[in-house]
Length: 202
Image (tube, rainbow, N blue to C red; front, side, top):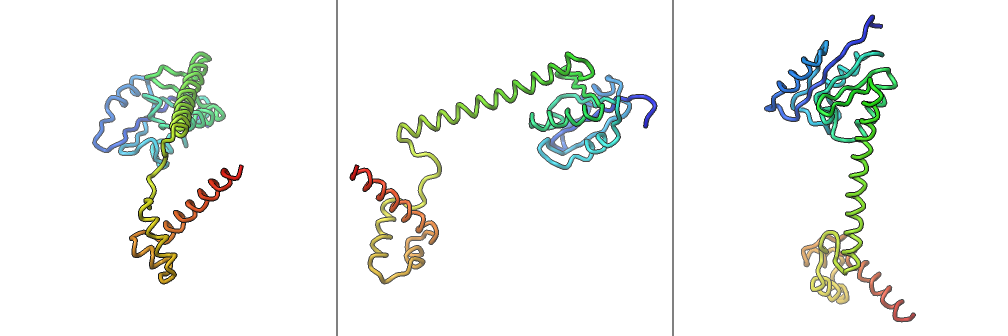
């Protein structure tokens, strides 16, 4: 175990032609004992050698210093999980841009508030999207991809099948559609007709 605590920096850019200098200058100014980097690696990628290296050497009492929160990852869930992992190992997190320092009570509170607001924003977007889809559905707007087989093609398929000469595969080939696609379209039409018949009986 190390005799005293250290600050270790981590910097990342998503593409190989981006420059790390701004992050490195800030991390050096923050008096990091050593700085680890990843270049040409996006936050969404699972393999980040530089991050893995710094996480492996962090010991209780150390602090991980980053230029900005999104340098650790693009997912709030991932960030929270990483901070919890650091905290459980006795390691603090310092983000220079957002001025988050979990070595202080205020910094820890601000980090969780920031994470909660990010989650709240995502929940609002999801809720609005769901409400918009439901409103469109109620207005009769057809959602999803357009049907692979239109009504005219489906009518031709029914006639060919009723003739009893061609197999389903041959009918599909003649119409230029896949057999499974034709099966699904016919099944959907049958289900629709059954529902309409039931409604008429009510």
